[in-house]
Amino acid sequence: MLTDFFLIPSDRFIRKRTTDFTILKKREELEIVVNYYQREAEKTPKNPFNHQQVGSGLEERFRRSGNVSDLHSAISNFQMAVRATVDDVEKPPHLHRLGCALQIRFGHLKILADLDDAISSFQMAVRLTPNNADLPPHLHRLGWVLRIRFERLNNLADLDGAISNFQLAVRFTPDSNPEKPLFLGDLGDVHMIRFECLHQPTDLEIAISSTRRASELTPDQNQRMLRAARLKELEQVNAKRIRDEWHAAEARHREGEHIAAEVRRIEAQRIEKERMAAEARRLEEERLAAEARRLEEERLAAEARRLEEERLAAEARRLEEERLAAEARRRCARSQTNLESMIPFMQQSIELTSEDREDRLIILGEVLQARFHSLDEATDMENAISTYQKAVNLTPDQHPAKSTRLVVLGDAMRSRSRRFESVGDLNSAISSYRRAANHQEAFLKQTDRSSSTPKKSGAVSSTTVYLKNM
Image (cartoon, rainbow, N blue to C red; front, side, top):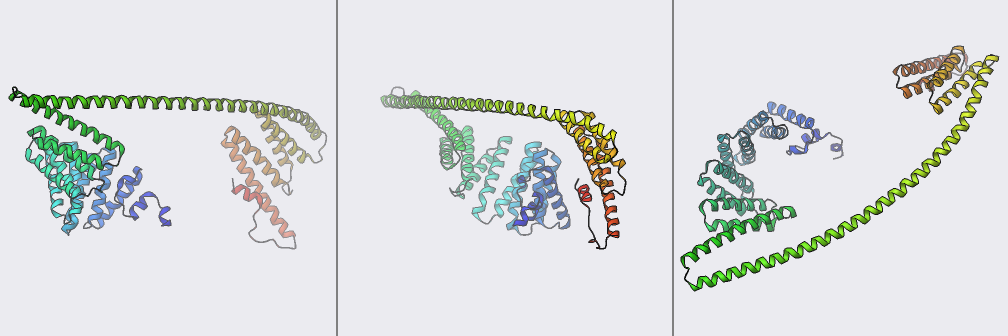
């Protein structure tokens, strides 16, 4: 909805009842959502969704901060979500999250009871899940924690249980499911672990077939390459196993011609495969070298073009800047000559006659201010402001031009405050604008009283509007 677009991320997260806390990138947003669901959980302690949200938010906060107390609180909230769920059919998701959190805490604190509790939670999630289509995630997690406990206690029963659960997860997962390559890869890994323990060829063969199938179903190129590398390792182990078995058979039947012939055949196959592999590697290396040379040549050509374009552009900019600088110096020289000749003339004119002295002072201040902008001499701006101040002081309060001259004085003070970052000049400018506004309003009221046509009520002077817009 359009209204959702204007909500902040935390409000949108709460409104849509989102459960993926990783999308809350800012710590403040995560805190807002966690605090909200904590309040809701206190209001409705029998609502498992609120406990689930609190646990998920605290778990995400633990991942970011590493504060174990957040993980403890997350586990407590997941446990409350399980207890608050009346219908057993709705418990597996909460049990799954509880098991994951317990597994995380075991990884940090190495307390075996956490691992046992995680296994119990996943076992209960599997037992309470009525639909086979929803079982694979629970089965996979159960197999994983059983594997972890086997690595900790070296109990083969845990390894057998891990294999059984991974097999069921693979069986109930269609090939179109993006999680199936992961399930197949983990199934191959646990079979390989059992092969290393019991040395049963069947386990190694299943590990190879599962890894090969995982590689075939993996859409991501990088992941497929990793699985292909793992498959190559397993095949090398299998090849070594075959060689070891062959050597054992050769020792037992050293005199048999049949074994000698088989040895020659296998060796010939190996040599041919190695030759073909070496040839393939050589051709691939030549192709990659040629491709690298082509890309390097293209890069160097593009770099040369870019450098030439940058050089030409820089040369054009330099010539243009020199032209503009020369033009600016020429204009500045003309302008400076005019200003230097005007200032003494106007000062002499003001001293010789008092007629229109205020207007002449304003013009002199503008000329001094113009020379300040040209030469950046602070004394010019000080003299301009002093000249404007004299013009204001000489103007009677009843004069209609006084507000305009106050605005001119305020503009000069504001210009100096910007140039020299002076707060005092800014305050003086505001005071001058305020005096101008008050004078103009008083002048308008006096004009209203003397005029036969009444003014519209609520009229605001332009000076007042200018002051408010600062």
